[in-house]
Image 1 (cartoon, rainbow, N blue to C red):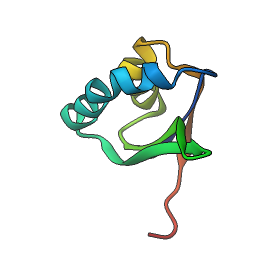
Image 2 (image 1 turned 90 degrees about the vertical axis):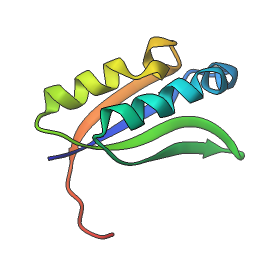
Image 3 (image 1 turned 45 degrees about the vertical axis):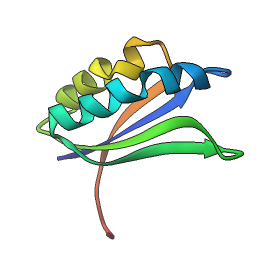
Image 4 (image 1 turned 90 degrees about the horizontal axis):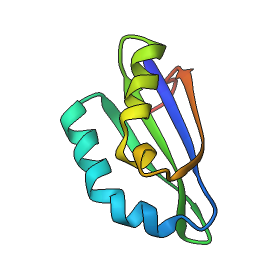
Length: 89
């Protein structure tokens, strides 16, 4: 099943994102369940994330989100994990 992980950064947390980016990208690679991902932008600056996961359950997707180095660094103001259905693309 596919799940969308929708994350919004805390205000003023760009440096936290930049400092943790390499660990976040390594986590994506090592877990192997990310089908697509990228940052949200405001005024050209990263301010959140959209990550599409292919995993067995909502619980697995929530566990992935909780294990993200960005989450451990306290980057996010909010995180939503939602089942998602791909229609186009």
